[in-house]
Image (cartoon, rainbow, N blue to C red; front, top):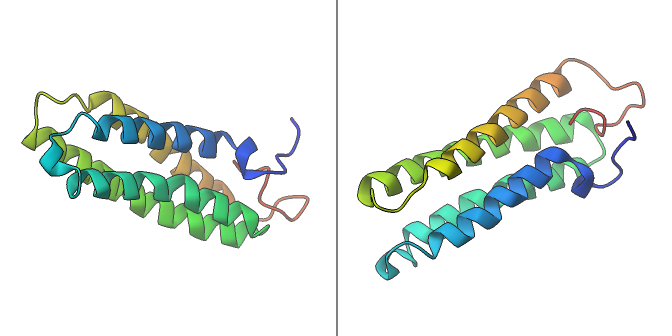
Length: 130
């Protein structure tokens, strides 16, 4: 398998981007009074995940990517909590598919952190890790 040279090549980033786009679409189904509050928080938490992965990849170091993935886990937990709150406030607005997508991204983040913590890559860079 070729080593990704851009964060855009990372499956983790691609999945996190798709989740973010889906969150933005989901926010359109929320009541209009939630758009400046809950919807904005959902969008910010979701967009932080691929942004952090991209930022970490750009450092070119395992340590930088690992730290960014750890921060992305924090953002994903915030997003999970916000989706649960949304589900409790608006049970008629379906969010289960988003929670499933988020769980997959969280598992990828955790796996990346573990792999990055395991040691240095043969080429010294982070790109084969995720």
